[in-house]
Length: 229
Image 1: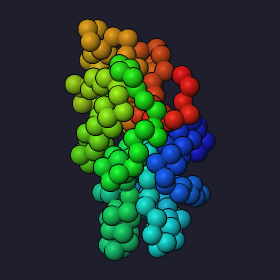
Image 2 (image 1 turned 90 degrees about the horizontal axis):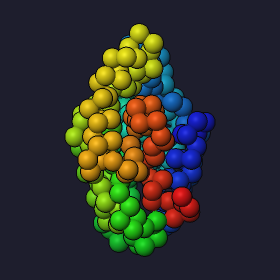
Image 3 (image 1 turned 90 degrees about the vertical axis):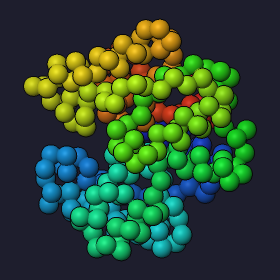
């Protein structure tokens, strides 16, 4: 988000600010998800300690930690208990939220939905990230998009085929695309045709871009009041 898909980060800031949140974007080390996925446990542990050190002052100040990438949130919520002292891992997990989960909470607690971009019945095809589903958070995205006026079709496919870095590797490319073929079929036929494609994870967006040969978007971009698509 900081260096490649910066549009998602900017949209997240605009959405949160529109809902009255005072946003701070600190310099934070990588969560360690990438090395952990490759079995590089020592490197992942170093990343965990560095990320916690970067975030703890904000937690101490009473700030919530809002995360755009579900894989990073899963690290905070489920993996850091293996790398950090128990209380440190608990504090970070208890203070961390996926961005649309956070928006959902704000709206439930009285934030003005009118501050966000209206969907005006725009047809959306939505695929949630596997880590997001394991945390039980995918329903928040559907609820927020529908509340903002989007017509949402949710994916019936568990995996897009990318599986983290799996589909980026040359030797697994064809298998990755084969796994993603069911998702491609759902989003190119029947009621799935001609919808704006939305996915919560970076790897899912990359895979959908390749499968469908057109760009996908993160849900937070559809809520950005400054969006002028």
